Length: 507
Image (tube, rainbow, N blue to C red):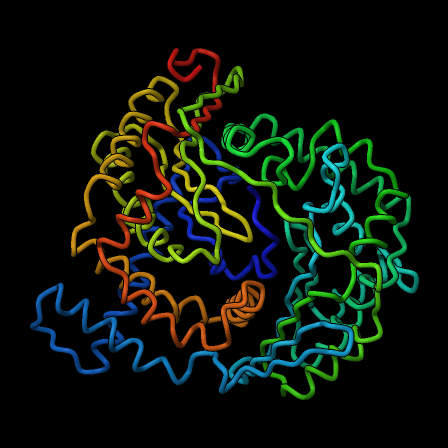
């Protein structure tokens, strides 16, 4: 599945809805090892937690386990008052249904305008796969009052950014500028959302760019393995079965009339979320957003259709995608995981961190990459959104090592459902998730992304204040129960993409 569009891609942090080591759609070259970055990320979060505990006066002579426990308490005590929450987030709903969230941060001179609309590829028919994506991308190509060049010039003149991108359930937008220029980027956003021009020449240029990107992806082992995995895991009538970007068959068939009609029917203020974070007063920010967007109406905007039922696999399924001439094979193995609002989401999130995130990419990293030397990179992810997302392990390997790497990964999945994680592992991942919270909120982008996701999933404005307790109350047995609920080692979906000289068991 390609998750709902995140408004703040520049934040460098996954949204609260995604617990992942590496994205299923990554396009790294053979031999690239993202685990080095993620290891630094995990260590930085753990180090941050330790330093905070030190500031709070925790004993340097304590054991590792006791220091870790004190860390979890100290970091919360020191940061709780400064975290975004009901006491410092201003939330209002405009007359047309747009929810506006404002968090003042006068320590910077910039401001972020981010959010999402309640539309995405879930509304498009399968034969028009990619329609939501090209519609969203077309908005910045010109409006009834501004040409494509005029929009770019206006943004460049003030050193600002503004992007719009579709996901499955939501279409995200992200803008950043100096605080004094908030009205400018809000005005452009309101203009392109409400009265896009969809100029034919620009649409055809955009279509060409999309098709070029799709052709490049067709030769990417990581992308092709990920696509084959989702196509097996979800039935053809499910939006998670398809790529948000569309295919080489569908994108050329999308007409400008299709784009205009999709915008007319599915873009509107109902369910829209706008977050403003930065050096601006809350009342001023709300007035700017109101001026830009409150006149927007779409009385015919529909509710999202329900997701089709999806059942977990009952037996192991394998698919091989031949890509002649490649020197690396990529594999994805996994099953259906939780939705974001499922009660055991957090337990699954921590179990996944033990499996393939913390430290050197968790257990699969230690075993498959470090000990056995079978993978260039390996990690696990839970992509939980409005519906049950995949829980998977991805690896880039030498084609000759596919079978052995797969066997080692499955062995770690079996271990995860057979026995509780150790007390040390539990404390480590609890420390990591609590310790990284201040890092996630270091930037306006990170705060805005978090606010949008809090509103999207109805987590409550006190979500961050409750976060430590939510993580701390989890037990080893909770993690085991979550793993056992979702992972059936004898009923997995396996996808491999690589050169044709493949092991027979991957066919």
